Length: 401
Image (cartoon, rainbow, N blue to C red; front, side, top):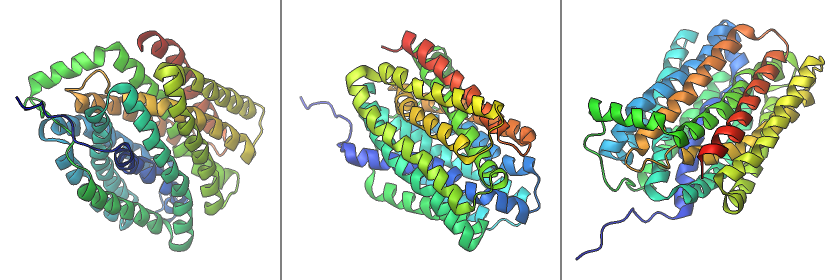
């Protein structure tokens, strides 16, 4: 008898490169855009709340759309969803670069977020298609090292484009990255889903799958970890351009350099994370990484309460937080889909929805609380740092083996 078919032969390097590009769309969509945010706010005569909505509405659409793309990817495969989503993402990015009003830009950003969801949900599911959880976490850490390089260059590219070509130039960079990612996936990545689930989009089985996934303690532990650490990251993303440029007086290029330094911290920790997963396991890596997260939260809160308003008082805690993020993110991204090989897309979507709801709440809160100081950003980052540590030290250690 013939041997049963296995998953497609995809090298760790190819898988990590594809995942870096797909997951990298998220920091590209936010980080490249950030240096242009104060500039487009003035150019389009927009309020602070409307400017923040260009970020938070994108993230909300990103979360909700995963609930659609995840089951569809389980039914028809990862590749058709990726090609469709990436084409939509590129078109929406071009539309955003050409927007004539803040309202039009918000609409294009919503469409961009919905399309980006296809890339992110399939990226997590691909890890489960090809690997068992621990190996998947190691490949994910390698991929997130590549994502760190993307995040490292993103703010610099966005700041330079905004300086030379205005805010539309920064959004044009986002469109170019989307087009290049689409070309690479179409050229190199095969279908990774071995057994398609014909019932994945049927309401009854889908609701039962989500109910089972949502109650699973391992899923809850990893999903809450990813959501909380991203809450801190999104606090940085949504507030930092105004804090660094409007409050602290940095130029767009200098702001891009500050964000790149944070990305370099993140990149270094993902390299260490790969070694710690092998040595201590996923839960052990997260437990140790949370000490950096705690240090970031306590430091930024103390400095803000003391009235210290200087670049280093924001940048140092930001880098510490991103070191911790480099441990939580690879383990959490692989962990949420680990128990569900037949419903990896649905599990990825559910985790993504939780992350997006947290980020949307952060964006709306910042939109009304930014007061011309660094305190809202500092206290928000401190809150999510403490929440991340609580999940890492209590839930993950209890439920993950």
